[in-house]
Image (cartoon, rainbow, N blue to C red; front, side):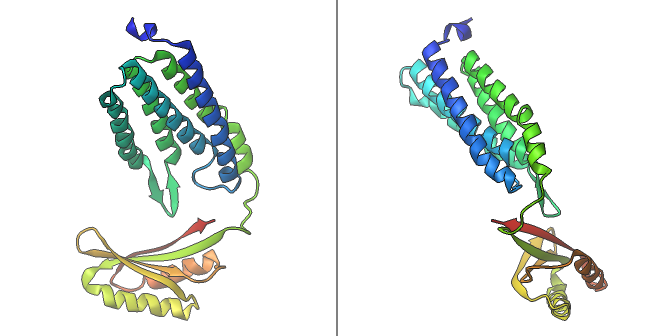
Length: 242
């Protein structure tokens, strides 16, 4: 088969070196992120680094194989753009937490593997698949070990956001009620945001200035806010920044 005839040991070793370096450097960056228990941790950073390295190596090999024809390389660029939309589709935000980012990074790496297969670069595809598997399996125990340690919040700023859902025609009334209840609870506002939500509804979000808030107190406040007849739903969530 033509696929196996295109094996070039020198180019293959270059690809292997690139993937190894990407794996190591991605691990270094990912360890710092995992240590701080951020959303994009060790495995995610390694997968992104390995996928990017494989895409670039693939583009170089295709360029050489087709006598410097840039049009063929453009196909790789289209794949990169397309996988971005697909990856975004598997990332979900739920109660202030982001889920699916490691799956999206895996899709990124697998897309590079598939592109290598399509280009007839069998060994490069196999190497890429092995590195993706290593990131998702060999690094898992290390990730679990790091996640067992207590979170150090000394360098982390926690933001609290209260969100209420209401109809457009009741915006002013609900906004006044929200501001009044937050003021009574001694929670000054840092930021207020109003965005459309579905047909005829609005999402009113209030970012609180307080740096230390008791979750039980906020739960009790949500119950008070929910008494308003024009509030369809109200909840609070947190987010962290470095």
